[in-house]
Image (cartoon, rainbow, N blue to C red):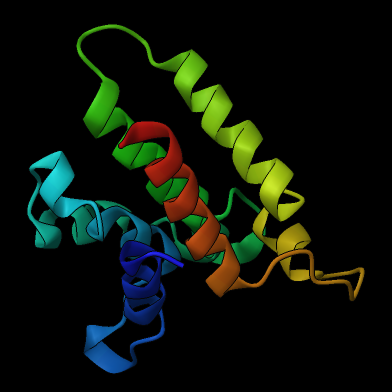
Length: 130
């Protein structure tokens, strides 16, 4: 596990006011590379944790990774191919992209823990972008 992966999981597991959701944790560890301060990245990711707050939507870790992708790759032209590749890599690694499916809601079978979703999102970015 890399230092960025460890730090992202540590941020996600903080409690109280220092807590980061999964999207924030992924995005914030790339503050230096994106040139965006951590507080701004934290604000951008605030609504994406826990599958956009109700587990029905895309995993926050994947949303955070997509935000980083956009900050790193967007130069006035769509980044659809890169976004699709990131999505595909995440779903292959984690088994799904929807929060409740990853957590086993309704099936009882957890495909990927929150910590591992965060680790995997950071790992994929590190392997493909840097």
